[in-house]
Amino acid sequence: MTIFERTDESITIGAALTLTDIEERLKACALSPGGQSVRGHVISAMQESLRWLACQQIRNQATLGGHVMTADPRSDLCVVLMAAGAIAKIASKDGLMEIALDNQFFINNGNTSLRQTDILVSVKLPINSVNTCITYYKQPDSGYAHLSGCFYVKLSETGSIDDLIICLGSVFNTTRKLISAPLLAKGRYPDDGTLALVCDEIEREVVLESNGTISEYRKKLACAFMVKYWEEMKDTLKPRQSEVEDTNDLQWTTCEGQQVYQAPSPGQPAHDSVGRPVPIVASPALVTGEAMFLDDMPRFENELYVQTVLSTRAHARLTCVDKSVAMNTPGVLDFLDASSVPGENLWGLFVQDEPVFAENEVFCVGQIICTIVASSEESAKTAANLVRVTYEDLPSVITIEEAISAGSYFEYTSHPIECGDPEKQYPHCDL
Image: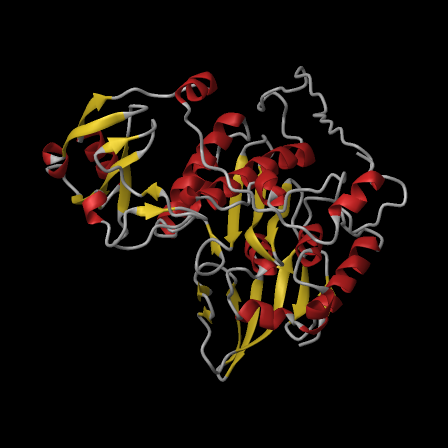
């Protein structure tokens, strides 16, 4: 179970080998005469997967067998093994048998098709032949993956696609190979039209297979992986240029940006952030697209949707709010206004002085008057547009000059926070 054997056709890896052992032996294979460390080769895909898999301490203890048999959807190596067409060697009471690591092997999180008495002995990893390209991608998230994927393609002698395999992790309840999206590519040439067809089907298939629970971010990321692989595959295999859209005439320029900020004073302590370009904590998540917004969150069973009805007047008296037509809209379940609030109809971060719902009078455009509760987002929005609000306009203060003329000021109470004696320090300040 600790075997590591390479032939011209395959690599056999024992189930008891640690991930660190596998990493070191793959490196030796890649560096040996005739070794394949080039991008697009299965050895390179395995190395890339191991590179981002957990930390060194975990790789020192974790084994290939444990990694495969947990059937965890976040298991990085499993997407590579599945895309490469790996075969598991199983020892059972009936003898030895071989089983493909495919959708029939991985049942769900924590379960495979093996019986409790079966033992995973080794995994045979085929060496990909000429005119093939296999590549692994991962978008990490605190050690695990927002999404991992491995893509394999085989081109015919004419440059058309003989086979396409798309395997994804961290999307479904276990590692999965997509079925319908690759079928659309077979027999076609790897051009932009084929890529568009495949990406559209990836979006449809992942939504269907995940029962609609996949976030918009993961769905788009799966397509982004496909686009990235597509360009890399064409660059690696270089299919016939007559069959692929010619992009040589396109003028590619490097994207550049510039940030100007004041350098900290010499000798300024590292913990002193004044004048330093301190990055916003949320910046990495925002610029990589990992930030989770409301529309990215999965839907839940029996989830309800709320749509607000907002004021269209700067200052007016509410003479009538007619909800009769809105309440007859299919899917509408309830209507909420100031009378629906238990207790006081006020809220605020520090001082509770702002109405939850407008009562009798509105004081700005966009103030919430009422809400519609419905079983779907579409029903809620449709019904909200059917609520009829009648106003009696009142004098409004829009500009600063109008506020000064009207004597309209907010009461201001100073809340200074002092430590020590600031007056003594002012003469020694730089500014």
